[in-house]
Length: 412
Image 1 (cartoon, rainbow, N blue to C red):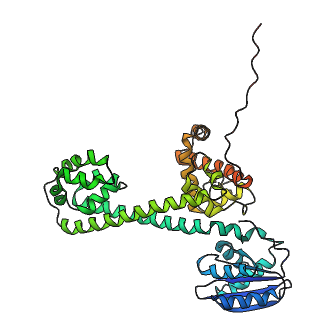
Image 2: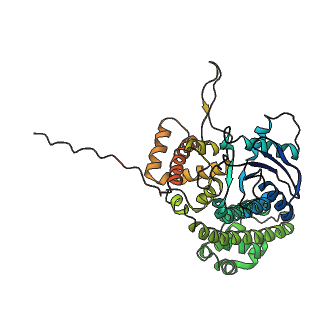
Image 3: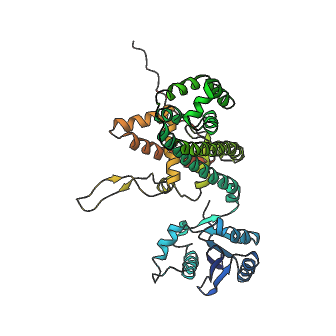
């Protein structure tokens, strides 16, 4: 996303979007109010207002939420060739503090947006982000990536619930199967035989047959280990039958979630490969398709960030200086920023430790006295500079060249 050109507009329309009704406030270049009342989230109503405003000159519409509840307004404006920009919520709240009054109403927010964008060309142009065709190419990836995040969270929740139920019924069985919940054969087995007695009834051959379709190699070794673990406990814990109902149901749900996520991953990889920046990002060591997807859906092409330092600050990787007189000095890690982006860059830095260049930098930081996580944060910050340059220049990763030393003359 890049910054909009705010210098050629005659009308500035702020939209405080809502589920069923927006509030629109439009000002001309002189600050005269051209529109200021509730606006239904309806195509006909939106079209009527935008056409009315366009009669006064070139219009810039700014929304505080471009997706979900604001998606129709953005689409209608685009269909009329009206440029749309996005004012992030945190920026919106900080700007609102500069305006008179302490009330929080839709009408006031819409006026704040309109007043802000009217002067943004000369005051704070960096606060606005264009919502244009470059976002359209990422729309499908963004929607499916959000769905993938939902599935990942659901998978974690179900896995924890399943392990907790197994631990209550048979701790030894949980120790054996808990770390293998990502195996399809294990989930098939627990869905079919959710209690210790049901597993005993299957026997070694039955357990192997149940697992073989999706975990053929594990089916050769795990059945005997399962029976051995079952033999370590002869006491039946009260509530085992009820827990069996839970284990079977949760295992079946987890199996479906994992299958859906695997299918979605294939679709996401195909979509990502079609994006012009996908190959640029994945060329960097330690940066896989999911991390590239996270960067693209959050950062886009990086044009919204003037420098690599701005991107690092947005990700919460830039150190924060603490200084007050002579008593407080030093730097600390930022607790702000986009946590999803920070997590992706951190994990990418960890994955890059197999790369000699990244490993050498990490080792230097450890030798300087930094702990593991602090050294990884430093590495992630350094890699952010490289990622920014790759996005800016649209060029794949190139390892740093090692300077060659001149040959040493042989002694006479």
